[in-house]
Amino acid sequence: MVYTIRDLANILGYSQDQVRVRLERFSQALEGHIRKGRYNRIEVDNAGLAILQRAKALEERHGDLRTVQTLLRKELGNGDGTQPPNHDGNGVKQPLDAWVKLVQTLEREVADLREENRWLRGMLEELQRRSLPPPKRRWTWWRWWR
Image (cartoon, rainbow, N blue to C red; front, top):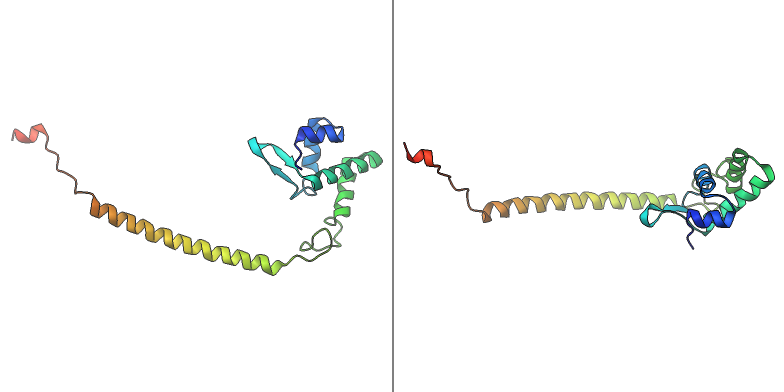
C-alpha cells in the first residue's frame, strides 16, 4: 500500500505540514521507502509508515525530533557505526561485486549504443545526400537585365 501526505496525517494524527517536516527530517531513515508519484505527490510505502509510527512513539517518549532522529539512526543501524554501509538492515551482506559487474555491463552497453548511434547518423547523412537533388540556382529578376 502507498500512502500520501494526507493519508499519513490522518494515520499519525499530525497536520500535513508536520508530516512534511518529519519526512524531511527522517529522509535518511526513509530512503528507499519514499518516492514521487503521480502529479509529483510524495508517496510512502508500508515500511516507511512503520518507520514514521516508530518515530512518533519515540517522539512521545522523548519529545525532541533531534533525539528521535538519533535514536532512529541507531535502531536502523546506519548511525552508530556497528554495520558497514554494504549491509542491509538485517545484517546480511549485500553482493557488492554483483553491482560492480552490473555497472560495467551497462557501461559497455552504453558504449555500444553510442557507436551504433554514430554509425546510424552517418548512414542518415549519406542517404540524405544521395536522395536530395542539388540545390537549384535561383535567378532573380535583376540578373536578367544585365
